[in-house]
Length: 295
Length: 140
Image 1 (cartoon, one colour):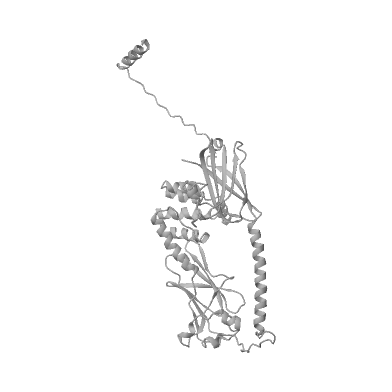
Image 2 (cartoon, each protein chain N blue to C red):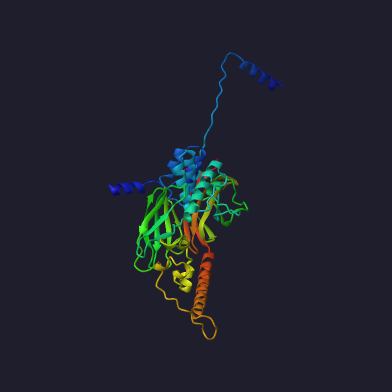
C-alpha cells in the first residue's frame, strides 16, 4: 500500500510555475493551483512557485494558506518582495514578513530556578500573524552539546521543563526552531551562533534576573556571584585567582595568552576568508536545457 | 471606359433577386514553436536589482523589465542560432558562483521575440556545472 502511495506521489508532475503564473493572470485560480501541484519541492524555482501559490490563495480568499506559502517563500529568501503586486498582496506579505522577522528573533524568557538541580522552565511566546505548529529549543547548558527540547503549546505560548545535566551551567546557550503552519521552518540563533540564556535564582530580587553577559564568565572566569549574586549557586565553583602580572610586560599571563590566541584566530580566519573568497570568485557554468510548451 | 461600363453593369446585375453569397474563412496555421524559433538569447542574472529588490522571473517573463535593463545584474549572456532543433542544450559560461541566480531565455525569429522562459533559484558552484531546464512559452 505504501509503495502504491509512494509511486503515485512519484508520478506527480513537477510544478509548472510559468504555466501557473499565466493561469493566475487569467484569473483561473484553481487551475493555477493545480499546475503548481501539492508542493514546490520539485522545482528549480521554489521561491517563485511559493509566490504564485500565495498570490493565488489570496485571490481565492484563503488567507491561512496564503500566509503559509508566503512564509515558505521567506524561508527561501527572507528579503523577497512583490514588485508591482496589488496593495492587498503587499499588505499580506508585509504582515507575514513582520511575524517572520519576529520569529527569527524569538527568545526564551529568562529562566528562574528555585534551587540548584531544579528543572528550568523554558518558555517562548511566538508573535501573532503566523500560526505556529511547533517550537523546539536546543539548549547547551554545560558546554556538552545541544539538547533537543520540544516545547508544548499552552495558550499563545510554548513551554517545557528542562532538567540540565549534572554540574553547574557554564554560559548556557540555546537556539530556537519554529515550524509555522504550512511547514516553513524559522530559526532564532543557531548552533554556530547561539543565543545566551539568562538563568537566575528565583528567590532573589528582580535585579538578579538581568541577562549576564557571557563574556563576563568566559573571559575573566569570574563567578557569577561577583556580578549578580543570585546566579552564584548555578555558576561553576571557580575560585577567583588574582592574575599574576608578567615581569617583562606588566600584563597578566592570561592577557598574553588571550592576545596570542586572538592573533592566531585572526590569522586562521584571514586565510580561510582568502581561500573562500578565491573559490567564490571562480565562475561556474550553467547548462540550460531548452523546452517548448507545444512539444 | 468599356471596362468601367462592364463593371457597372455587373454591379447592377448583383442588385437583382439572386442572393449574394458571402464567404469567409480564417485559416489557422499553428506551426510548432520549436520550428519557428531561429535564435536564442540566454542570460544569467543575479538575484537582485540594483535598487536591492528581489528579481522574480515573472517580471522578466511578462517583460516588465527587459534583459538589457541597467538595473539587472547580468552575470552571463549567450546568443545561439537555433537552426538545428536538435540543439536543445545551451551553455552559459563564466557565471559568477553563488545562489539564487536567474536564468532567462528569449527566443526570436528575424528579430521578433516569439517566446520566453525563465527559472530562478539557481545555485552555481565555483568551477562546477549546474544543469537547469527552461520551458519557453509563446509570447501573447
